[in-house]
Length: 239
Image (cartoon, rainbow, N blue to C red; front, side):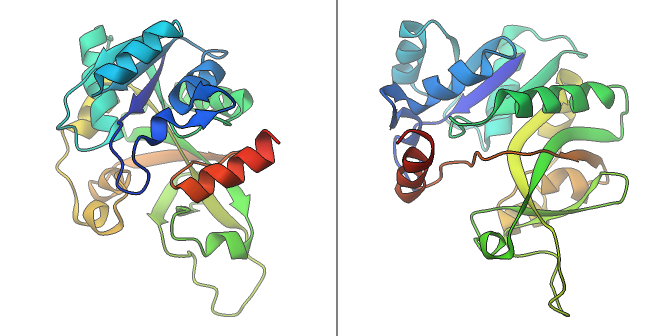
């Protein structure tokens, strides 16, 4: 299943998940894309989003306003749904209305590949970006091992290019795959120093000694964090 966390309040872009995307609320546009791949639930702390989801034929789960992260929100929703330990759960952010279905399928396959490996808590994806794009602190970068596990994620540009050589910078796509059991494990880990410093929850996994499986994909999509991002996305994808 796919669970989309949809928190209405956002410091940088209030009511972002309800922003208009070609006549649809952003969260609904994202849900429609994801529903091509699998069953979709929307996890939200907003009665307004619950009603909007119902109007468009999507099931929504009302979750606590005190959830610390999107992952905590999908865990609460998955628990209310009654997921089994081996259920594959894909977390697609509500601000990814232009994510490609092939990308979601790649994440499903990667998550299934590592479902029985208890050392791997999360599966996720990256794409190659230019050095100029990698400079953006809103774009999370990742460095990886040769056998496709994440070493570190940062808002800073990594790796540091001391010799100004030709480097493929890896931009993390903010999508995650778990089994329900692994999602529960993640949400019961204490928030870590690195997570708090970078404001990146996936660092909790690495700092606690677990692994994150990661795979390269081709994608033109990007998360919409600001109004400027929205204007840019609309020009690229809808105009």
